[in-house]
Image 1 (cartoon, rainbow, N blue to C red):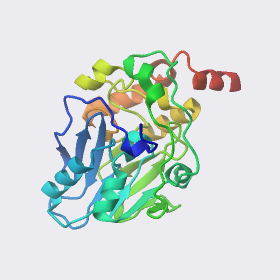
Image 2: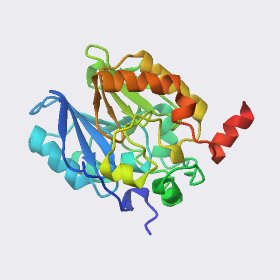
Image 3: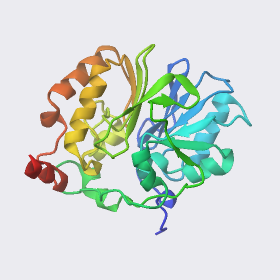
Length: 283
């Protein structure tokens, strides 16, 4: 097995993989196996941004989709990372080799993107389906893109996206962010919450819709995760792309997110797990 998380193959996919969809004319999502990436920018635009970098070995598909939407020899202005877990940075090396652009992430995420610190290990002891049980094999080691990654501006503004802002939504990781555009209330939530039970192999493959908290097996701070969902609910988004599952609009989003915020412990938090137990002891 390779020592680099970005070289490891994810032996899992979904029925949605490879079928991109425009949520809004300038907001496009692409499922790549089990995770979603987003393109911000109208088709054909010279000013577009990539959000997240998919699973390992997905670089070719991401580049092909980008060229189909924006044309050849038209790289993004930058890549924004909601966080640095292996399924969100898997193709980053291939993308940077092709495009040679800057990558932006929260300053708390930088140790995991510059080879300095590993993420907390995944927790296969949480109750759940098959994905949770095999999560012990998921890489938590850092990647090192020191020459390309920069911290996001402290004021919440987004590079190259004057109409957007970033929101610190920790819990799943220390430096997890979500992206929000106040003018039309569109949200790119990353894994702050998702629209599929990510711990179930069947539900991941079929993409069965179900608003839930962050993936249980890779979330070490449930107290912060709870507060992050409350923050996003207070924004009252009208459309949302999550890191896993189909996009959400209308009442499915507003009602589902409010229910998750109000009943987070019941819906999202596992009954057991080493990080759950840690939080209970702290309380």
